[in-house]
Amino acid sequence: MKPYKMALPKTVKSAVSVLGSDFEKTQILAGGTDLLAGMKEHILEPELVVNLKSVRGISEIVMTKEAVEIGALVKLDDLGGHKDLQKRWPALAQSVVQTATPQIRNVGTLGGNLCQRPRCWYFRDETYHCSKKGGGTCYAFDGENQYHAIFENGVCQIVHPSNLAGPLIAYDAQVEIHGANGSRLVRLEKFFVTPEQNIARENILQPNEVLTKVIIPFTSANKKSAYLETREKQSFDWALCGASLNLRMDGKVIKEARVVLNAVAPRPIRRYDLEGMLVGKKAGSSLFKKVSAEAVKSATPLAKNGYKLDLLRVVLERGLKQASEA
Ligand SMILES: Cc1cc2nc3c(=O)[nH]c(=O)nc-3n(C[C@H](O)[C@H](O)[C@H](O)COP(=O)(O)OP(=O)(O)OC[C@H]3O[C@@H](n4cnc5c(N)ncnc54)[C@H](O)[C@@H]3O)c2cc1C
Image 1 (cartoon, protein in one colour):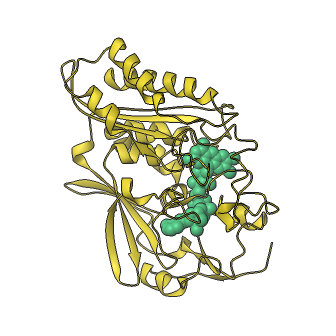
Image 2: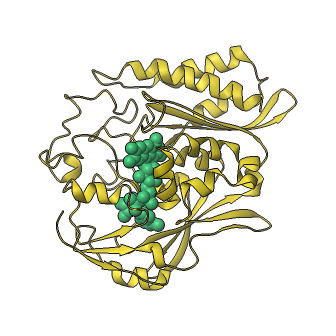
Image 3: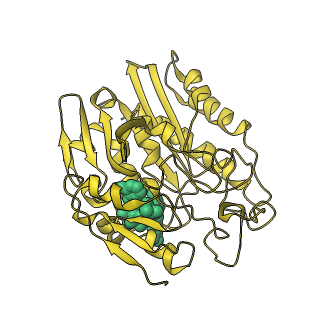
């Protein structure tokens, strides 16, 4: 690993002030489970690492009248084990317990999970100068693409790796971002970018910005929700595909729906078309089968990942059933 300096700011403001204007030179460190791997792999070689560990006020879970505010430095394990969150936003807790391993959940943070870099093996291999690293080629397009995108296949075939992003979007969460000009709130759905919007990055954060908290409104609580994913291994693995569902029901009739898919595209994708198919209909297996079949019709799989279509259909169908019966 290339030697680097470390800053230990005590406040968000001082963290922002040392971040600078170049991702190549400065990186934020939270739990380090992803960042340090990238540094050891020579994907990232910052001169300065800004460690958030000592920053005050971003490690708490606070219930207000309208929402829950979760600090970016809250550990995944504390998030998944929080009884109130489990009760009101079960899909979030379900997504956390399926993330990585107990050891990683003990160290990894909410902010780090949302901002983690993609797992594409060409991106993670320093010898491939792929399009994401400023080269002109996406090696996954004609290469080993079994874990890559089946939607939004454009200049880069990565899939977004965060489990938590899906349920949080389904719960209408917002993120608070601090930068040189103060703070702003952004809907999580708008936080992620496509490779066409910015090939080098996966979200809207600027080099001198810190994600400080995630806010989930109470209006999204206590609805019928579920998170389901499929992966190759029981643990220590990322999703092959996942679905986050949040339904407001009146008896058997679906009044409102959120459908978000993960691990199938370069960003978590909210499927408004599927939500439209669900609203106003009676929940049941024939509807869920129809919606799941529709979900994969617009897919554009690569040579080696067509199997993901079947997985996604099943995950979505089961997820809808689980949510509607929750
Ligand atoms: C074996 C293994 C399996 C895994 N499986 C899964 C899985 O199934 N699902 C899943 O979702 N994840 C999975 N992960 C990823 C894991 O969840 C992340 O590594 C972890 O959440 C990152 O959190 P961290 O605090 O350690 O982030 P760090 O490593 O400290 O940071 C990660 C990235 O986010 C940036 N960052 C961190 N915090 C902030 C902030 N507040 N503001 C702005 N930028 C920030 C950093 O600069 C860095 O680029 C797995 C990881 C491993 C090693």
